[in-house]
Image (cartoon, rainbow, N blue to C red):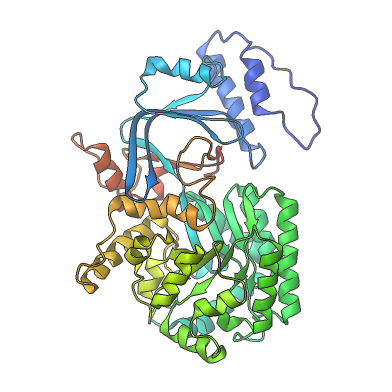
Length: 503
């Protein structure tokens, strides 16, 4: 096998994978054994590449993604070319095998050494899932506390568990498990609530970056209506730690290629007016940062909020007054919105994190009027809300979204039709990216976007209990079987910005 001479580098960086590919293209590939060794070297380099770059990739086979809410594209014999920057260079359907080399050449690569993976029947690519709302410090309490009201659940179950994250070693261990678990299930982008601890939330950002997950990471701001041992000591402390998180992430990932801070008032109940005012000032100071909070989540929460802020008629009035309601806002739940609030979030361009599992398993929750939001053009994505939701799977959230939309259709006597399969998939991918303000970068396979993708296999004997694929099944049927009966065992590869991140 020819020897590849690497250019001089510092010990902190590996040679560019593209440099190796380009220089190896001038070598004579004389045996398939040598080529196998070459591919092994490339895979090993990819494991240690920087978090925001990787190897050029090629795929040929079935590709499934959404262009719009009701527009599911199933592309057969499709070639996908991903550059070393992790962005999609080419997407072309109906390509025969003998045409691949010319397309590879047109994109600046040497066909003889460009790695193309051929997907068989029952194997396909789809965009990575986007989780618009979850609580990372609740990872170990999923499934606990069913059947009690929201505020009781916080006080009896959640606050005590989140308080454990005061210990940085516990935070490192649990957040590593959490992020790995989400990636295993194909969640390439997550909007995380951290605990109220500044150090633990910085650890969460570090873990997301290290493991290669795209993430919005927020320090939970809360300085009242929580136990003394689990709240920010003062407004100034809460704001200071928020600034520290922002500065930490700016150093960690200066261009926010993977990780980005998100302002995170837990909800108005937990924040004094001065804290909300300070967060609004940070939002004005950093107009690129998103904002997330719980919004019209439960009747008990709405009533308590009105007692604390009687000067505001609605939660929309409240958050807008403090500068926290705009097109960067991710509003979790949105179950009990008044007509005026719907108009407001539509006009302001806010996004809704639809959490159908927690909405229907916590006491006092209900079904969110998702069809009405979609009818008005409001951005909607799916959230697992784990651990309020018992599952951390977007596939489970999607299935529950179908179920509750059937209920909503009955409750509205047909005025709000149930979600279709393609609509549910849109919410899990491109819709979620829109809510998180990332749809210009991820959410589908448009050329120029970053390659956040899942490689799904539906015909493996070891792939769990998914409904078996039969000879007569169309691609649409195979895809539906995966969405409705598949799980993480069918997701064999997960890519974020072109890098393989599933362990």
